[in-house]
Amino acid sequence: MAVTLRNYEKLLEDLRGSEFDGTFAMLYGSENIGLQKSRYERIARSFEELYGAAEECGFFSAPGRTEVCGNHTDHQKGRVLAAGVNLDAVGLAAGNGENIVRIKSEGYRMDVVDLSEPYPKQEETGKSVSLVRGVCAEFIRRGYKIGGFNAATASDVLSGSGVSSSAAFEVLVGTIINNLFNDGVVSAVEIAQIAQKAENEFFGKPCGLMDQTACSVGGFVEIDFKNPEKPVIDKIDFDFAACGHRLCIVNTGGSHSDLTDDYAAVRSEMEAAAQCLGASVLRETDKASFVENIPLIREKCGDRAVLRALHFYADNDRVLDESQALAQGDFEKFKALVIESGRSSYMYNQNVFTCADPQSQPVSIGLALCEKILKGKGAWRVHGGGFAGTIQAFVPDELLGEFKAVMTGVFGEKSCYVLSIRPVGGVKVI
Image (cartoon, rainbow, N blue to C red; front, side, top):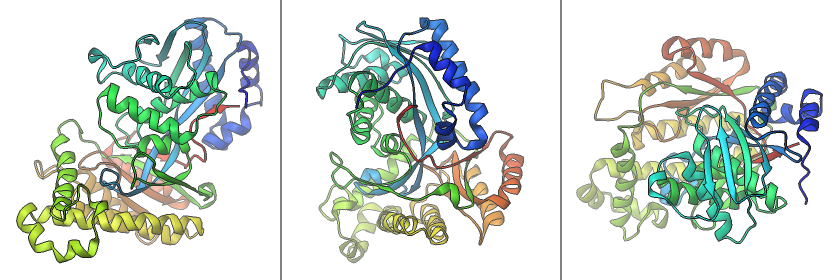
């Protein structure tokens, strides 16, 4: 299907009117329409200042994501349940008829990529320009069309909030290329795979596919990584807006920069346990056989490896249970399973604080406060990789004020993000 672009002045006129209101209500909530109009106009003005008023241009958006279940299961070829959220990266883009891509992100230097050089550059490792180059290169490698374009972008997917700002940016770039040059025919799943390739091979981060898939597909999405090259992805039909809860992500503080060894140990210990059973990852093993061999695994890998493996088996199955609860509209059961998952992460996966600094436990404090406020009413768990950073909570509307007041009182004024689940992923905003 051909993608409709608009003259810059017409786009601005439609934005100021009511043309975008329905879409903004769906993406961000009806209470945020005015805020998003101002935000989009700011992006448009930035585009005009940088490149002039384009004859044909369009807005594009890609959301951040939240991991809902399947904590540290993806690297073992396991299942995860994730969801897109209403924080997003937005860009106004237009083809430029050149072989150059220019992307100016708000607050950052412009990224410029020559499309005649679709290969990793060592000096770009760890920089956003490498993600742009990587996405472009993978579109070329897969035989899709590509061309030069100019874009101005802004993101409220805050770095460090645990909702995957880099994946949102990668998916945004892929969504722009898909719509400007390929009539939108590239699937959301393939855009996610393209984005992952960019992050792995160009940016230099060996991430899994969960973040990019959740950002690209949107809504609640169950992902099975048994075959990582062809993950099985099921979007779950659940109207989060009607369930009487808000999703809160609380940044409890603490840096992830010195936690590389902690993250690596989770994966290496799970894989060491699998190797005792003749497999490379736990998904390739049988739980009953594992239990029979616990004495051997304790001897060879240590007790924590056993506990982390038990967490994997339970959370991998729990993804199916949570997905089913959502599909059946049973939000109470879903919340009970969220709490189970969080307890498993705390007790068995042991990624709520680092043993290297047991005196610092902000995530543990956050979870304790969640239980005090939400017990019997909401749900809570560690969010993402753990050890420091964020927690996730499903908070009933009537408790939102109290919850936010307590969290911001302990962790700071901007620590609590009140979100909703966004029903779509990477899109052209029309």
